[in-house]
Length: 349
Image (tube, rainbow, N blue to C red; front, side, top):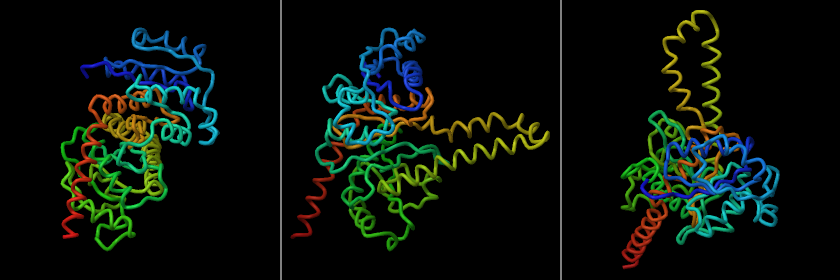
């Protein structure tokens, strides 16, 4: 990154804040030397933590507030009383143009509600979607929506596909990512009317993505596509299932390798490979869900993320800011709308 990128941080959000937020900022600064941080939270708690990391000395501005959004606060409460909280002020800095992105590990519902109210949606987007990277057998894929919209129309799914493809081009560096709709089968007759209609619309597009049709749940883990599109209900179930399965595999492997003296000896020969597997499955290495479709970049970190995990979330925000995610989405939406106008005119004639 050639230019300085300013990222605002909600230092008080998350299970282990503010410690992991400041640790994550330090790790992210090592990876991205051009980052500068606006850090919002209780100065008494945060300043001593920052002093432990000399690398942060000249690349941050600490802005004090004693108000925080708790895990138990409802979205409505956050909207009414949270504008001057660490989360609200971090979002406001993006709205004011001071920061190019905000990162928080705080209350997801509150963050979504406040971000939608303060930043609004982009032109051409009806609903924002929660998107994140998930581990697959081939690397990573972009999945959305992961919980923002329980019910969706075919228009919503199509917009999610456009945004997800832009995400993949920006963060994964793919020129023409493959995109699939999550379904109960790959045959055209499978699924409900919403996914069938979305499938027909996406097959007609010439945007910089390769739409492959339907993909099933095993295809998600198998890395069959770069972008998986679904409604928020199904996506959230898939996300939690993926994370739970990853933890189960890690735990079972650990138990098996401690089972006997022979397994312990065998571990000495395979530990480097097993470490690679553990790192690939670790949610901290894929941390950073993005509220796609807002007029500003907002990244949600896992509430229980480690410092390295929070750094990954900052990295997602930095990549999107540096590579003009909004410009890509806006251009794709314009092209798509022009295509649909042409298709409608052809059908009318």
